[in-house]
Image (cartoon, rainbow, N blue to C red; front, side, top):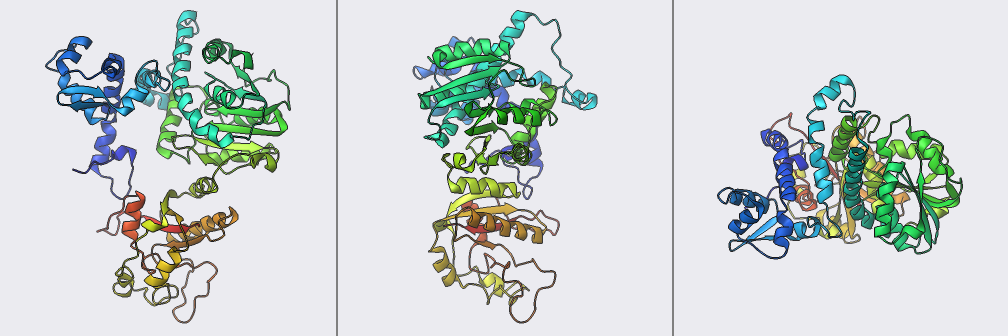
Amino acid sequence: MQRNKLSFLNHDPQGDGPQYLEDLATGYWFSQALFTAVESGIFPLLETGGKTAAEIASALGCMPQSLPRFLHALCALGLLHNDGGLYFTTRLSSEYLIPGKQDYQGESILWRRDLIPHWTGLGKCLKEGGRVDCKPDGEDPADRAERIRKYIRAMDCVARVKTREILPLFGGALPGGEMLDVGAGSGAVAAGFLEGTPSLRATLMDIPEVLEFTGELMRERGLEERVTLCPANILEEWPVEKGRFSLVLLSNIIHAYSEQELPALLARAAECLEPEGIMVIHDLFFEHYPEKAALFDLNMFINTYNGRIFSLKAVGEELVRQGLCLLDPVALGTDTALLIAARETESLARVRVRPEDRLIAKVRELGFQVQPLSVESIPVPGWAHLRCRFGCDRYGSPHCPPHSPTPQETRELLGGYTHALLLEGEPPTKDFQRKVLQAERDAFVAGFHKAFALWAGPCSLCDTCATEGPCRNTRDSRPSMEGAGIDVFETVRRAGFALRTLGKKDDFIKYYALLLLE
């Protein structure tokens, strides 16, 4: 039986119905099963070898008649594996849910569990205009210290994994010198840079209560001799030398501040750059992972005084106001992205970002869902163009069949390419097609000199299309995918998007375009 992705992780306005709402309403079932499993210690118990349900129940102090149902759920979630009545950890749980392993995520998971009571107060926060569950002024110092320790350990779990995504971009970009980690937290990202660049030193800036634990983690990593701990409130004047640092890092920190606070924060960071230095901002952004970013923004609304998620566009514009040059945003494979800036464009040339990745980020800023695909996966059967000839009242229009490429010409066209992007967008048609043309121009400027776009459906750029004679807008008009013989539905499915035929006039319409690159 085909395994479907949970609809609340794959919002589809064309196909959503009651099941989508049901999955949203029961989303906490999944997280609660994970929380309970991590709390119970079941994963380290099974890491040494398989055990029966009865053995697991005895070890965990659970009722033997009830535990198999929980074990079945963990198997369904991919966290355990049942082989002949013996339960084992899976690759996922073995790698990330065993305490003591390098990539252990348990503390991060349990930190999310501890936020549940705050989230149940969302309605009250909305009525009050902000955070309502505030820690009392008289919080016991030991309790505060333990709360900070748990938070730093939780964030360290996440940061270690993120760091491995970030570091390959900077191989050779940092010959040495000094870096400044603003709001360093656990220092995991800075530690990654230090380990990859032996001649680099780091100044870790955060509040004193955090740096106490940052220092512990640096000692655990053997890096204490290469770091300087700098206690500071980053909303006040920074106690560091201006123009000193070859790298200024702001990782998962700007979301803790407000729109009003952001300009001063970025201005201070820019002042710390040496002339050839690089600034790296790593965070969640609305454009990169919209659903997660929007919910994380709510999380900041519930749990902080001023925190919020920003758009890549807003932060990028502020960096330009600070006199910096920017790379196009770099989307990581997880839920975060990077903005990389410098005073000189030559400094940015040292960063190892694939041109295709830069382009994808730029195209997403136009409002598209983007999926790379191999040109070999684009089917051009013998029947697709016939749907235009028989069944479409636009047949014979300029740049529609028979004036568009034949299937054979399309196969020859695709034969000159290996890589393409499939773009998904929404009505109105004219706006969609103009954005596709902008994406094509962006691709050309980015160095893809063969960039060429086709879109699904007839051209709708002109208010009045020429009914006779040649097209009057050959600069902007492009062939339709189906008119050129491409099976749009199969192309979309092969790219991983969801598409279905529509039966009602008011059904949600999706638009697609193909951007051939090289």
